Length: 126
Image (cartoon, rainbow, N blue to C red):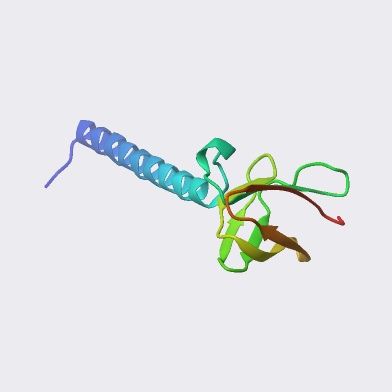
C-alpha cells in the first residue's frame, strides 16, 4: 500500500486527534477519581452522626490536600479538600484522627456522638 502526501497528512491529523482523545479521557478519569478521595461534601449532605473538621497549620492557614486517617469503630483514609476540611459520616464512638504531611504526624482523640454532627478544628504544630 502506498500513501500519497495528502493521505499522510490525513493520517497524521487522525493520530494527533486520537492522542488528544486518549489524553482527555485519562484527564477526566483521574480528576473524577481524585474528587472521590478528597472531601467535597457539604454539611447539608451528611446526616448525623458525622464529622466536619478543619485542619489548620501553625499560621492558622488551612492545610490543603493532606492525608487524614480515622481509626475507631470505623476506619477511613482521606485527604482534606481545598479548604483544609474533611467531611464524612461516621458511626458513633471514640476515634483517633491521624494527620500526616511530609513525614510529620499528629494524633488527636475524638468522640462522635449518636445523632450529632461533630464539628472540630485540628491545629497542627507545623
